[in-house]
Image 1: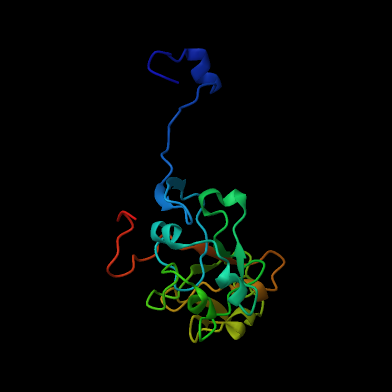
Image 2: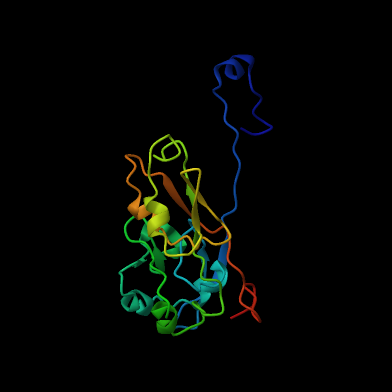
Length: 208
């Protein structure tokens, strides 16, 4: 619908008009390894990256799609993003619903990365976990503490009055709680981080 297309009273009552709005899709300039060309790549859908990942714009510039971190993961938690992830296609992601990240102490994924896409100096939090109280057995009057019992991070999930509560400051978003939840409708939601910090001394807008 544009200004040159007035809405008639009949259309207004029937709800047959549409508002059109163009929403810009974020993109970054990414060096195509092995060539000297620069391509504009859409950031695409939010994804969960391995521990130590830099901010998304810098990550897409640094990641060579070598799959070294995938092969280094002893728990097969790191996968390769499919085409449905658009600009992230071919890069390493974690899908806690299929295999949670067990947060290895030595972080072999970071050690295997040949570039600065994964850094030991970056926070190891990969996502945020939330308990959907309307499907949680304990929050609905039952007895269950399985998520708290299996959580690999001390005090990330604590029991209050017999109900699990997540401490967002301690939670790493690994997804173990989601993988063990026994509720008929899984009560744990794992959400990608809205952003990740830019590594010290670099800028996502710096020219490559």
